[in-house]
Length: 246
Ligand SMILES: C[S@@+](CC[C@H](N)C(=O)[O-])C[C@H]1O[C@@H](n2cnc3c(N)ncnc32)[C@H](O)[C@@H]1O
Image (cartoon, rainbow, N blue to C red):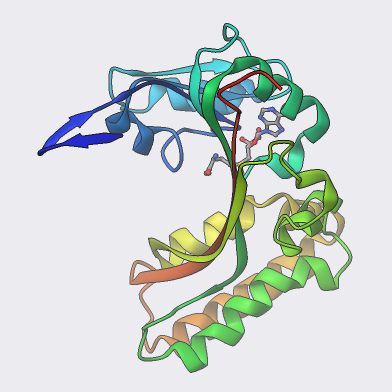
């Protein structure tokens, strides 16, 4: 985005890879770009994204980050939000170099847990339970290797963006406003949780029920629709394609 007096001049085109349903990572780009494309390998996610209300300059397509359905040198910003750890990064970086305009930027970020109820008056009581919910699949041995890449905050060699102009920004607090019910539901959708639930259905159900009731206690409420604001830490990598060919 360029600012000339108060006027916002938009960049032409951004692509959000692994966009999911588009709410979290694709739609927020709409005001900074003429056109935004969200792609995801999952047909279900793209069907949801297409159904949801979104700005007119945002489109969604089923595609892999390693084979993007876009022309060479057309993308000003290529983003992978909470998705890069699922991709073949060597192939993704080749594809990034193909689609980025000279001077275009590739960014990858992850939301690392455990979530914390920062600023909440009961955070001392609440945070250990949020930590327990986050770490339980790991402790039970159900964490996919991709999640370890997030735990190591995208520091593994495979994340090295192959441009000399690059940087990383760590520990950006990312608040997510939810209800207790919504947050527990969100945790249940995580791949590590689903793996654990498949392998240990009864144990998992008992435990999450118990953890939820302790969470409500810590928040001093019995109402599952009480607001819960949790913070994840965002770790972001950024790299700029050179203006001149290498
Ligand atoms: C945790 S979700 C992130 C969704 C969204 N970007 C966000 O920030 O909320 C990760 C998404 O990456 C998608 N994904 C996994 N592997 C992919 C690949 N190789 N290419 C494109 N999308 C992929 C998954 O289908 C999933 O929707």
